[in-house]
Length: 120
Image (cartoon, rainbow, N blue to C red; front, side):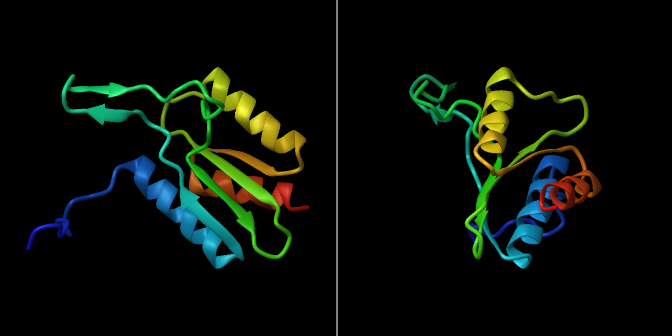
């Protein structure tokens, strides 16, 4: 049964929130996806290589756009005491200044409130 996940294994709170947000966006007319912004594991050094500083630093966990309006959306997932980094703040500010939807989501209810506020 290689590749099948254990159905009893519980998702991490961050993964659960990320999946809920992506599903909400998709069901509400967005094309949305998880953006893998973590470093890549190097088996030779047995360490994660950091993302190159090529403009991708701080990119949000969830990205997408509204299919009818083409309005860009960026959602940074933060659980517990996790805080936004300077590069994440800069990315969200850039999205907002460009007319996109920029959200820091600590809870699903908080996400819903933010997206409703930013959609007018």
